[in-house]
Length: 349
Image (tube, rainbow, N blue to C red; front, side):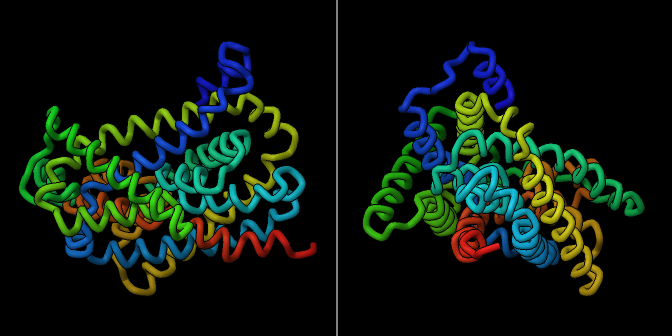
């Protein structure tokens, strides 16, 4: 995204992108959502996450509370610099810090947020993330790694469950993953036309339903779906960058203030609530920190932290907690935005 934004700023890419870009972005979101959730078997998630799931629930609550408090603190700045789009940006950041980038782009697509606002929000959130991730690693410094060896094959197969199959990347699995994901995307668009349901949320729900009901069959496709889905994520963020060469000037003009205020409040209250709940319920600190990482980051960052700390027995629960965040993040962000943040925007100062 930074590269394409820079290219647009210096004139290598056109300042005004093709009108077809937004249509391509919607296609990417609708297709990437089911691709990344083909292995989201709820039976495995609830069976294997244990107490980390409880911590993850409190972390999600902390994000929602933090987002609401942050928006209240920065409401004036959001209104001055983003107008009615301020609550939409806050909703997208809420979704990101429950699930990840997949959920951020799901809300962006559902609400049609301006590219300049999207780039500015991601830039600020990434800077705050550079502070957050080392801090949670530091908090776990006094908890040594366990002696259980990480079972790489089992982690791969159960995190993207079909159960016993190892990760496969073949022409058959690639075409199968795309075929099913196109079908889910088409069904989600049909539901949107009939019931006005957000397409990304519908796609996530249908993908999880199929992944749970047909885990052995779709588990074989999950690895291929994840690879293609991640490439589509990169395409989406690159296209956002290309459409927002003015993001840097927007930040320098004062847009950074509400975003930084919002972000600090979200991160601080998220940590306060998840750490407080963990202490009250006597959840082991490594489980609490990995659940928080799964909220703020994604399954990959949570698994990387577990591996780096030597908490090998917690790698799989960390991945599954992050997957659950991908399942619920978009819907949670949209619900908070439309039920809480949008009415707050309409309130007189």
